[in-house]
Length: 83
Image (cartoon, rainbow, N blue to C red; front, side):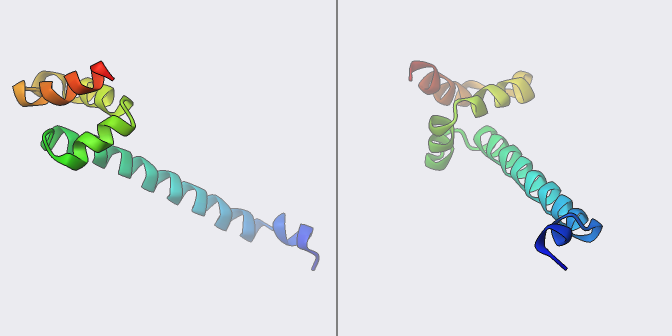
């Protein structure tokens, strides 16, 4: 069996597809975790580092938890807006 025929075999393609789905799902879970962590603990050093590294996370937090945001969330939102 040559390498090309192995790479095009149905078993390899199913395993490769399952691997891609698993990696994408884990990444999406990790992104949701970071947004939730920033919401739950906005004054935590790690939450501030997450937000500074990727300001889109704060936008996602505002979109997802808009009505639940309080004064303690304003510090991290204002820090991101100034950078």
